[in-house]
Image 1 (cartoon, rainbow, N blue to C red):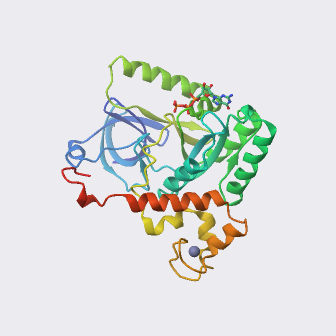
Image 2: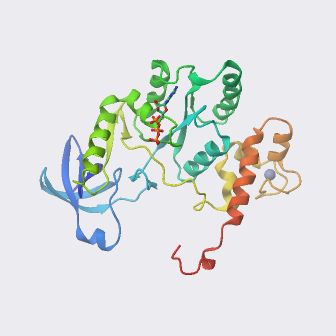
Image 3: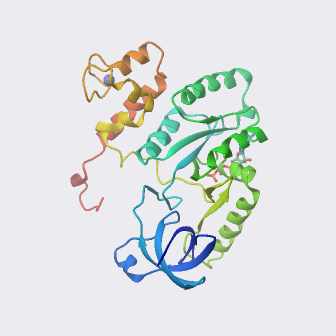
Length: 301
Ligand SMILES: Nc1nc2c(ncn2[C@@H]2O[C@H](COP(=O)(O)OP(=O)(O)OP(=O)(O)O)[C@@H](O)[C@H]2O)c(=O)[nH]1
Ligand SMILES: [Zn+2]
């Protein structure tokens, strides 16, 4: 038995990296019965008699997993965020951030299309993004979004980590991949083409070694719904709120209608970005409006 990490899934085969070698393996039948599919990023126990004939025996405990791209044990996500076309939207950005925080995936914010902004709009956006930087999110922003030093600063964060790219449709994810690693983009295009010809049905994902780390070749995101999050702990997913929560009058303060709330005081004082607080309240409203599962008659969930 050996231990390794699934680096690629294609057509029912899992390619496991162990030491310096890559082993072609299949999942044993009992995984399918238990509805447990191995994912790229999984650490697995496997046996093999040759590099092309192995079996996955067990999947080690996952830290987290994404549906799209289907990857496990993700350390960080580049949230590709466009300044215009589609317009910068703080609600959408905060939504990406809380969903990632809930999965314990570190967000990195990468601004695109800043080349299309006039000076005033650029200054305004710079101020907003400086706030995100201040509360701990690495922000990558430059007049020319894909200039070499901006890309270099981003990929310095890739070392020893598993990174995925996410962001709204049209934000520039493919363009960014293309600038980071043109060979990776080409590979994705080639696979899409063979998929559309109907040769393979399994979704293909691959982790690419890049800047001493690994990057998923397929950008994406499962869903922007907040369904998996818990209403009462939503505030814990806002690091700027967490930093103040100790000073709220009530323990477990929801920063909503409670008196003596330090978060609300910080918004009033202009120290906490007002849009973050508005988005928080809106997410709460959205959570409260979710129908309890037992009310959804005739639907499994
Ligand atoms: N001017 C300008 N155009 C950009 C920039 N980034 C991307 N684009 C353009 O925006 C369009 C969308 O970019 P993509 O890279 O395809 O966006 P995506 O996020 O991969 O989109 P989906 O595949 O729909 O998820 C393309 O026409 C790009 O050429 C940028 O920084 N500046
Ligand atoms: Zn509070």
